[in-house]
Amino acid sequence: MEGNGEALRGRVLHPAALAYALDYGLLGTALLPHGLTYLMRRVQAASLGPRCLVLPPFPRWTTGCSTRWTVPAAAGARGFTEGSLFTRDGALVASTAQEGLVWVRQS
Image 1 (spheres, one colour):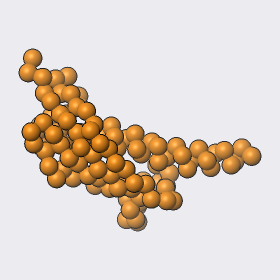
Image 2 (cartoon, rainbow, N blue to C red):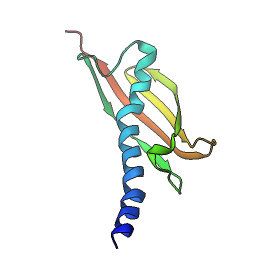
Image 3 (cartoon, rainbow, N blue to C red):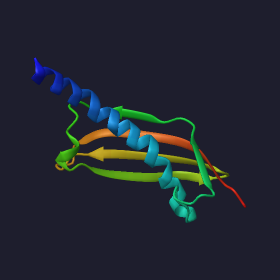
Image 4 (cartoon, helix red, strand yellow):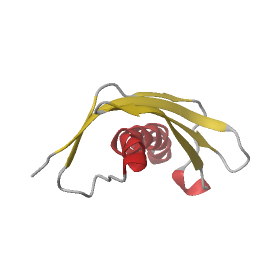
């Protein structure tokens, strides 16, 4: 029975970790063209609408997935980002998009 619990945790934990990582990091991609990062204390950002589609079967993080991030639009304190996650052999694992609000405090 313990083996079944481990399999269930794997099926739930890995996609959940992916969704968290994408929501946390994808908007940061929109900051790069402006020379900004989350590490700057004056930068604040808010996610306005993350979307993520995970395609089964989802591989374990240890399998060496690769990512591709794009920023189709970043202007007027808003950024729109898209991302894809691939297995080593190039199969699409997940696709995501996020819109966010970014502002820089002047003080």
